[in-house]
Length: 74
Length: 547
Picture 1 (tube, chains in turn purple, red):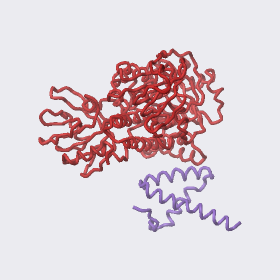
Picture 2 (spheres, rainbow over the protein chains, first blue to last red):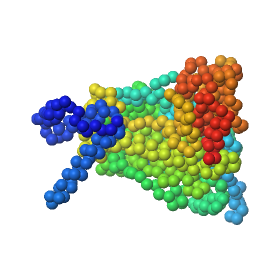
Picture 3 (cartoon, each protein chain N blue to C red):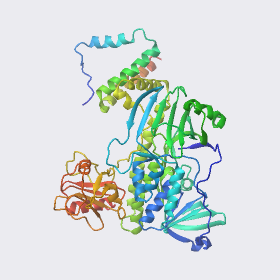
Picture 4 (cartoon, each protein chain N blue to C red):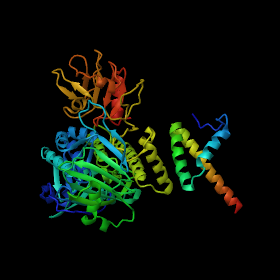
């Protein structure tokens, strides 16, 4: 089963908001700790190494795109 | 495991020392040097086991070692079920198990709290336990004793190979002894001379890999203690804040303690007994112990690109090296020996083509990769490489307190199990199987009973009369005869072994009529729901290197 990138939440704003609110009041360090735990919990829930790898690739592309943008701005 | 610095804290009673003895080979001038079928270099657990295995198969073996004694210090301690089954075949299994400390349970702690416990062999019906702990010097001493029963092995102490010359059809070795040098020729040389192998340098091979920066203090201490016979591993224990620790029992009231130190620790300072003592006293809560051995290690994971270099074959630590969390060093070396010996025997007899040896490289280098991968993951989990790695580990340890998946992600060492081979010697399943060991996997043990109702195990039946290719068949009254030279183990029917518990048929997913073709090292070569003479012969031929 490939990674699903279609919109899966009936109310996507609620999902985004839930994550944002979870970070409210946390220091950057605490936020990073929180994200690490959340990633592991969600990865286990997905339970499919191929889907996880695809998700990692998709997320990694943000890094590459970000670097290219930075280079263009310079 | 790479030993950076060793320090012998206390004068250690040498368990076994051997004298150099002159051999008549040394009296032959260079041109007329003696020729032997196999020379093994290095009398550690791997070289000794390989020599015994080859001799039991009828080969004459010369075994050389540059020392005159069994190595001191504890070094390897955990020997796996697989290794014990191999040692059973070599006639030393009982002695090892009698002396060893049997264990199967491990516990992982974080701080003062137990995160979880695991059992490496939670089911009955196996002859051998998941592991024994036994000091390597005992294992070597028992193997040397066994060699005394085998006149086909000539074990020469203080014989150091100083040069090696590959020829088309043989190898010439120059060997240094207390009475000067002599030369030998061999059809094959097996280098079991350890992580710092001098033969590896002589063939000019690289030993590429990774060195881990963190240092680990390993101490064997003697004390009477009430801890259970279990493997205890701590992350961030109260007695050693921020780092990891391991406690494991050995025979003779000796306990193995591993303490992770930082990468900047000064080995010369840290290994001083007066500096080690308070660390261990904090761990144990008392200082009523004596040191047997103290050493400081940086772990390394490396392997040779190829395990075969012409007629020189590398086995054990000379070919691959892993960090110790997982008991994958000595055990994988013993798996090398059992994989190699039957192949080398067949090639020397001319009953298989020399290319059969290539499958040793294919199978065992893949196993080395697996062992390196597993032990690298464990070491990285114990010593994270970045803030983010440390953060992920922290999340895992914290999730482990309340979730099953968190416990499973905590990596305090994944202990050695036999590797599965994706092998040119295997015949792929033609039938549907819901369980049982597929081709390329190790056979599984199970209880059997003889007609006289004697209780035994499948591994006993397998080794009885010497291990060769074996057809394990489950009788349906019309058993297919094993091809010539293939041993028969029949389950059920008249004259067959009984399967009183039903575990054997269950573990092999076997219905009446099914058959497994086992290799001499106990690996499955092929299996059949409805075997035919032709299918068995084809699988046998493939497993013997004809294809």
